[in-house]
Image (tube, rainbow, N blue to C red; front, side, top):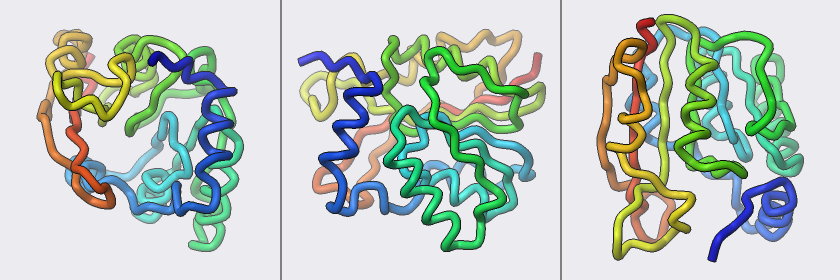
Length: 200
């Protein structure tokens, strides 16, 4: 079954998820593994959901724009950030990332399992344009693998396809791996993780 992944879809998704703990999980371990050694600067969490990754970044000195198409998870994230004393370090933006344009480039652009209303790889190419020279792009997506149909095909990717979309004259690929993520999931997620630095 194909999904539109538009504002209506995600509003309904978060409405159904309210009260079940969805959105209260810790930040993805991939983020710490790939970003912990970077010098904090400006960051965009694209398709942030309830903002676990945005808050993790803010705790470590980043100034974060956390953008999502649905209002409900943004409100949850803002509440969590305020409770943690980080309200001034995260800007919560309700935006359709298929058409939204940021006012400036970022030292870090990251996305974790975001599914917009456009082809997945085209979305990654779009947000990659928002990385400043010398900045970092971190993509974590659901790995497409026959026989592991946890996610719709149009919402899953392969590492090779993500890397193929990065112009090697502009990007240095640092990480390109398939990983298992078994934290907080009944069955481990099979993830595609790509980190690249903009060199041109």
